[in-house]
Image (cartoon, rainbow, N blue to C red; front, top):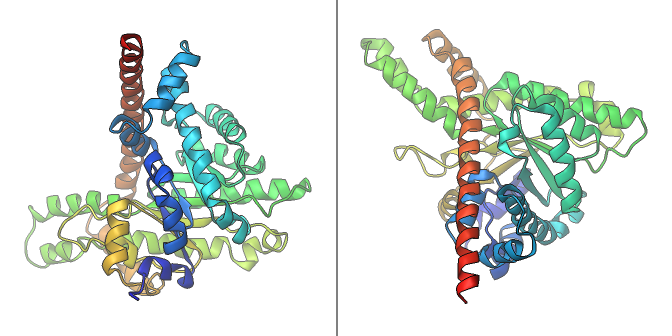
Length: 383
């Protein structure tokens, strides 16, 4: 029987989550099969995923028609939340055996607060608490964009005992802020005598988008230089995102070391694991499994989009790579800086663009729900 590289990742300390959900996956049993055959350990969603699933399929029409009939005055946003909660609850139930087997470490499904709240701390906290309560499953993570406004929201939700997926992380500096917010939240729970063992969190560190942006900056510089400098710039293409992620992992090791996190760890608290996000390859010149194969290591998660998941399942290599070439990774980041590429500016722009893209997808989703609601109402009257 052919080896399954996806399944092999768990033996190397990495959990595989799936960056997609659609109602048809639940109805057909596809998700359950992935859990059983691939040792799939979690699912992540975002506004873009739900926009595609609801707007581009008929999977949700029956539920949407029911909502239109039962709650005709319901807002389009509330209709979306109702549809999403149905999926999240069923996904959580499918993953519940994984959650129990891993003692609350895996078996998670993530749902994001409205991306329109990305710069609203109080709104994110309120919606995060409301979503977690309405879904009513312990193995749900509330996704909070890791903007400056999101940092205190992450801390408060952790303090309240709510699992958090801190998303849209591009820079090492912002990652450290997120990890410290998690630690503060856990410490507050510990100091008031609350259980800390079943509060889970991941920090979603985006990868391929960094290469897309940095490669563009490198190419712009290459047009104005020649000789050794051009050669050096060319050699850095497709290298910076992985180096950035590896450097973040080194910070993770320090932040959750025995010296820094030991007391909380001994009290049962979990490490906030790094989750590699945006691991689909966007540049066709690069391997279609580059951002999976290059970041395999202990205490990490990789949430893999469908096409990359299938590619890695078919021809990926499962071997521990995350700690390889750490010195080279630091050298890459130093070279980028020395050549005048401002990674800080690039990652700040990526965060802003990420928030804007999710907000755009969310608004498009609400428009599609409105159009479908009108169409389904008309269809009902015609029948």
